[in-house]
Length: 231
Image (cartoon, rainbow, N blue to C red; front, side):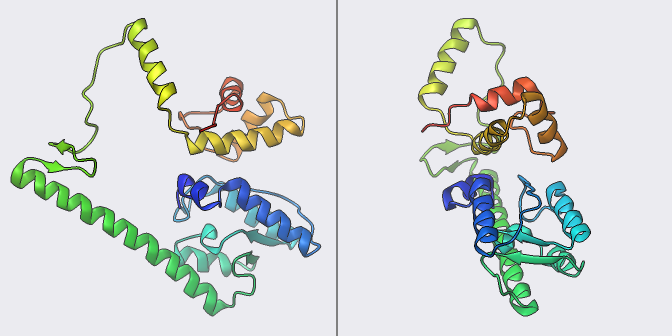
């Protein structure tokens, strides 16, 4: 599930954390650590999950996730995690047995594979149309003659052109869900007294993706905190 889809479903990072915190409070447990990964559920390279597993194993704690498919949408990898000996609990399947665990993860992987298959199939159709007739009609009704970025490369813009473009972007801006999630996380840390440098170091440590790429630094965190996500 992508970050944007998480936001639409109400299961963004903060919502998932809130569910986990509420479950721990309701069951009179103790929260000994919180870890985040802004990654796809199919990705095995997840530093936050790795640190969470290490802490749970060291402390004999239970690793809690809001949804089972947030643990992984890769059935083989999910079973590997289950067989490490660390207690795993998904709030949407709190009483999951080995059978129900395997079924739920298998369904999540199947869903991911179906989506991937539909995407590849649609792309194949478009390529065939381009080869046979030289164009296809997009969903927006536009005639498309090639795949990829439809905008040609342009030279540097003049200051006036840049100002006009920024005005258009401001008028028609689409909220970046990655900036929204990073802002929520940074605000939470700032309320705890963390400095911009400390937040930047933490974001780099837990490998939170920076929307513009590269490493986090004080100015990047400041821009995130100032990001206007009002629609």
